[in-house]
Structures are given as structure tokens and as C-alpha cells.
Length: 269
Image 1: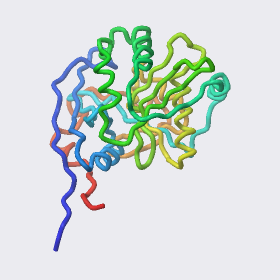
Image 2 (image 1 turned 120 degrees about the vertical axis):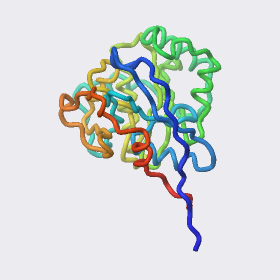
Image 3 (image 1 turned 30 degrees about the vertical axis):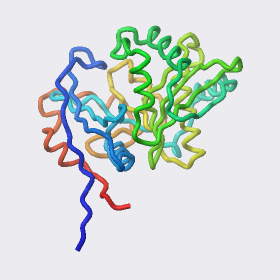
């Protein structure tokens, strides 16, 4: 009898470093390489278990004494826009969406630099040069698109690197013109991705991590029908105040136990 082996990659852990979201805490990531013919299948499977892609790496927070990061996604069918969302949709109605292959351009990089200098001048990406930017956009072993938004003057106004899963869209990284604060382009791009997913019959839009107590990530809780990956299951985010970060040494399971509980697709099909 012939058996198919599971697609089980090797996992590693990063060294602790200062957390970019919560002051005074240290972050650590569990990660694995994303490569080979089965990259798409592995990415689809692990993304449903709280993992996130960065180029050819899949990672998930695995901090030694903190469990503050929750993978978040929007349930498209249950989502109902608020009045503020409807105003944003109307305010940005003149923007045109354009989906392209993951190929970096000088115009994208110029907008990226403008965005970083205005919003994240001291962040981890502040020193990213044009070659590193190109790698972020182009080094993807799975189905990815660059979603560009163009204003009536044919100027690039916003960009999102978007991965395509078997059950949804993942907004890997987005940036936009920071000189248009009334347009709330970051929030509006999420609303537009909800519409893209709905028109494609995909049930979810993945937003990365929601971190209670972090001003950088708090905006995600404003979306109705938000679900978070909590203790091995996806569940609706009801009251955000109910999810306070655990900070004792038993907040997270040992690494070996975490890896043992990860499910993998088999190699058939």
C-alpha cells in the first residue's frame, strides 16, 4: 500500500528583539521557508493557522512571555459597512483600481518612500532601498498581485501587495499618499479588498495581526465581522477589551508543542 507523506517543513525561531507594537516587550517569531512546488498549498494551510508571509518566509509570533498578537481576518459575508465606511467609499470613488503581476516600479518605490518618511520614519523598514523594496514585491512563490489605485490625474495614490489564498485575499503590505488624510486610504483599501473578495466568491480578507493595546494595530477592530485566531481556532472578535495581553511565562506553549499542533496538507493532488 502506498502512502503520501505530509508536507511538513522545518521550523526555526528568531532571537528575541524589541517588540515593534508594545513598548517594553520582546518579540520572537516561529518561521519556516516557503518554497518548492507545494508552496501555495503550504501557504494556504498555515495562513489558516495564524501564519503570515514575508517574501519566501512564513512566520507566526511566538513570544516567550507575551501572547498579544492575534491573526485577524474579515468574514466577507457577514461584513456590514458603517456610515463612516460608506462616506469613505464615496470620497474615494474617483480612484481607479488596477491589478498587476508582482513587479516593482520606480513610481511604487517613490510612493513607498513618501509614505515611510511621513508615517514610519523610525520603523524597521525606514532604511529599505529600492532593491530591498523590489525583493519585497517580487519574491513571492505563491499567487500574488499588486493592486494599484490611480487618481484622475493618472498618479499612483495607493498600493497593496495582495496574496491569493484558496479561501480569501491577504493584504501583505499596503502604502499610500500620506498627504490625503481625509481619504483614510489604508481603511479604504481594506473596504475595496472586501469588495474584490466578495465579487470573486472568496469568504475572507486576511489583515495580518491585531494587537490589543497597540495604536498601530488598533484600527483593525473597527471592522465588523472581524475574526481572530485564538487558541487554535477562529472566533468572532466581540469586545476588544476582553482580549488583554497575557504576560506571564505560561502565556505561550513550548515551541515543540506549537510545531506538533500545526496541521499540514498531504502531498496528493
